[in-house]
Length: 359
Image (tube, rainbow, N blue to C red; front, side):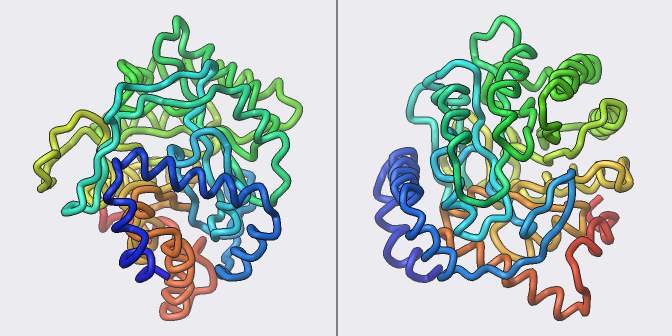
């Protein structure tokens, strides 16, 4: 199936503007979402192996998830489950609808197997997302990525509004303070600001009927001192998991002539840097808070290395642009083959076992 995508589908998509291609893919998946029989047929065709994990208070059918940014408004969570994802994140969702940054704002870097985006949290708002999430009927673990409006007067209140609105309909909620495409958002990663934010988010979470797990998504562009501060604050605040990492502003090693387009870089060049942050977090936290590894995952080996570095689960997005949705069962089957080769029963037994190799 990967060959079909690369030979037939990808060339068609790559003739389009990158964002237009993304929208076409989302429209097709949204259409499939309407028909349970089609979702079931896809699930039967994929037949992804399962290696269930329980982490963050949630039971996942497997370790591979869809990162936030692909399904911005909760259009096709059922299809994602059918395609073999163990979980997915909707969003980023903000209280009010917003168009995001001016176009063009999505750029492919094929020679680097990478993407630069400066979307700026374009979405239809929390009311639309919550309405869709409330009526989802398909199985699958679904989270919400919480964001703040660009012109918000109080960004902390924005996170709380989205959590209150969408929290009852999801399995976890991720506080996104690491997008480089909303001005000054990353300031919230600083120790004092982060403590104030998480204190209020956790207080809000405790008022919900269902105590939804709270995740924190961080940037890769951090110093060791900043990583230490985040780890310390997350422990004090009782955060359920950390997602490491978002996109990077670093362009070292990138070959493309458009590498200096503004925005966050994702894909293969991000792998080493994001895994370094992941490994350091794993070392600092020492299994006290589970981690989700994101950044440059495009093969089973990539996912395996994230797990060895400290990830209990893995997310991807950019890899789908270059390899298509057959990438998901390929990674799941590849991980099963690695377990068989190593004589190990569960991926959970490998979490963080070789993190020192990535420091």
